[in-house]
Length: 279
Image (cartoon, rainbow, N blue to C red; front, side, top):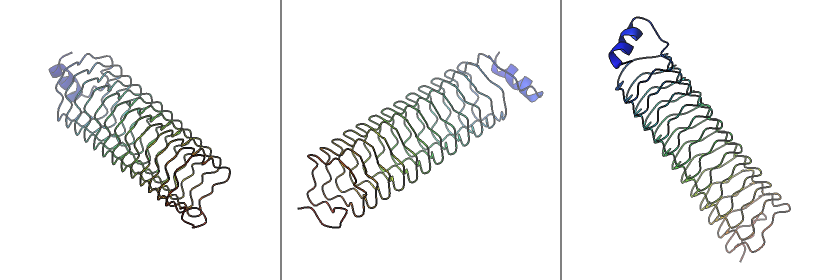
């Protein structure tokens, strides 16, 4: 099927183009809401600025496709392949993306709020400045992903893999991150206030100047983590492992430290739970 045939049939009211081979096609700026392209091949296609809101792209192939500023609001992208695709500034609000592949995709400044990305693969994806508020990323893979300054407020990342991810200045207020793997992640100046991180693995994670006010880190491993200058006011650290961690000049007033392991932790200038500054 060529582009002319697709547009003619769509204009005539047809919507079902499942399994179509549209590799490399140019659909930029086209208005095609609710188009049905399940299992279609759109590899390398150009869809910049297209209106595909409510479209069915389930299991479609869009690797290396360009979707800059594309409207995919409420679209069905379950199991789709967007590896190496460019989705900068795309609108994916409330889209269904469970199990989709976004490996190495560019999603900087994209809007994915309230979307479903459970079990999705976003390893090495660029999500810098993206809006992921309220998104569901349970059991998703985000190893080495760039989430610098991303908005993840109220998001759910339970049991997600974020090993070596970059979350510098990211916003995760009230997020659920329980059971996630965050080993060696860079979370400098991250805002995790009131977030739930019970049972997380954060070995050698950088949390310099992080906001952990009221954060629940119980039963988590922070061995060797860098928490220099972090705010841990009223944080829950019961049964957490902070052995070898750097807590220099951290503020831990009223933190719950029941059974916390602080063996070999660096505490110079740390304000302890009772308000006394460690010498």
